[in-house]
Length: 406
Image 1 (cartoon, rainbow, N blue to C red):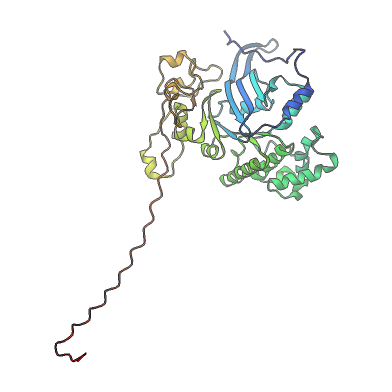
Image 2: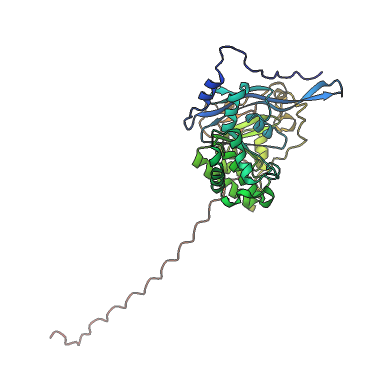
């Protein structure tokens, strides 16, 4: 028997619902720094599995995203990490409506954008842009750099007048660290890092408030990764951007992110600040991920505990009941198969102040330091004390036969 599917959302038919013009006014209102600009609640994306050729029958579904909740605050970077196939990229695509969610609510400035259409949806897409993973396939090889970066102006002509677009494209090239004279070149004439800079410039063209970065540096060399990350941090401060940053590299996510969400099999299993996640993880899956991070210090590497998971990742078409990590977890008990753990502060940390008191979807959450702390720098050897000068010899005593002073 096929699993029951979550019904797809339908456009609002309420005659009292606000018009597209009013929705656009709400979406264009500014958001104060530190306030939530994007709110995601109960996000689902299921891809149907069908059987048959002429008469297709749905026999199941791949539950790529299966109930994701998080907030993105104005001016912050939210990092999302996890194994391949856990649903990170699918979350990114649903946020920009490249994939329509099966169910759930995505609120941008308090407005549910899953039910928008027409002009209001076009305004949302102007303010939420995306940087794609592969800098080689995300750029059209038949278009010049000027056409690629200027294409958003054709869709949103109100952003830049037609006679001013060439100058705007050259300004964007300069902002991302490329020569404005490259405007007539083609993508194959650039390196991978330069192509990713072109993708970032295209994302900045419409002055967005949110950028969804789907593994933007995974296909680049380490030195080029650092350049792109530093560029994104600079642009965030300059344009007051909010990032959803998706990556596999835990060190890069820690460097750029204010908060980090860990995904496993379509769900976020732990959410907290960088310090809470990396130094005080409470979910077993997060602890196993961190234990796989290479440690450069040989002495610390010998004394740390390595957590090795057994078994394979379950199929998203048939996930385990209860906690989805229980089939690979060393803490699993009968309760884990019966109850789905909620993403909340565990009861044992709820009334305790400290970095362990953060959201974790585990019945038996326990703080465990996996990444060894950095060894303190050895004290500098003090300079040896100066050798004291030998004392002057005392004057000889006056002889009895001396006639001085007589």
